[in-house]
Length: 496
Image 1: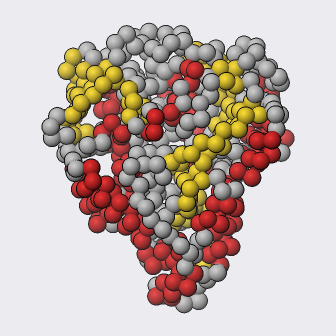
Image 2: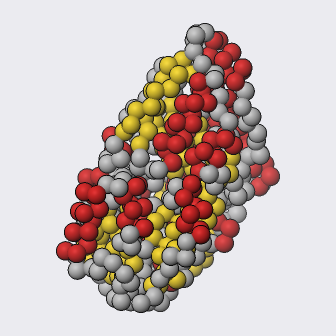
């Protein structure tokens, strides 16, 4: 598969001085990333082009996911709100150092967060923390955040994988240097080729077990899989579920099944016809048999979702049903002015191996409701720059986020990454009320109502949340079966 891509990968590995077959005695772990942002790829965690597969290993957060997705301490040892929930104080760890040898202090945290909340910076992470009005250093290891209004779940928002702490004043250089406090430091950044990371022996949790990690740019999903199967990589995430049985039977690999809040779906821009009519959008969602789509696209490896981005195990997840209703779908299309059915185009890509399967399944199921779907194959290279949010209908995928962030970042009328251009004043008002509600039961009811509103009116078809399949070479140890951004990379090791 893709011999030219693999030959190029092999050549790059050899030029980098790596062994291309068999166990690597130097303790090097290799995996690939999809170069989804193309020329815009960056190590700046606050940028649109951030490469999270690298950033997760080199930069730390104040708060990270703990067991069950609960906030756990990272660079912040502890935190507390005032009685109104509008002022939060975070206490930092002492004796933490950046890769350049400088000591972490409150000024670094203030600088990092101010970059994100500054609207002029255009950070996609701003939606997660734009409720923060001011960030200030109270002393060397204490930071105070003042919010525009009560927000009871601020630590959940700070778990965002993009909210990494970088050195004060490093905004102009971090895109290439990647300097952080994480367990690995950047030796060479090459998003199209091989990015080389080496162990940060001063990491506050202890020296990493690995001496080196190589993160290799391979845009095509089939090429990534072939590279893994031929022994060129130690890990591949997002394995097509249909391969699960074959890989699970093999003694050459380890297969991990990880329930996540990651989701993929089909997006229809609500500002262009025919998707500007909510009846058409609802008709498309009603035409889908979600269990069947889950079976065909992911071999059943996931949890059915009724168009909510909120993770199945999230405390705010709405308990909804969404049975297929072809007759109602046809009636809604007719009411919207399409008595003979609707013709649409949907852009799909091999960037994710499940997207084409999801597209073909939607095409087949929607036809029963008079929705004629033409699938357009979009190039994997640069998909996020050239197709996502540009075309009228396209495939998408999102990583797990806490409920408030998932709902605000992708669906709020003012959200920069509102990919479906969804605008609903009632939905926006529900989110605002939920953020300000200190009573958990009342707050949960508001988030549930917001999800129910999406089910009826949004431009997003979210059929399921993904159970991620991760396959590892047998030489890998201490790789926990947890979501991507919860993995403790300093513990991962490889056998000689």
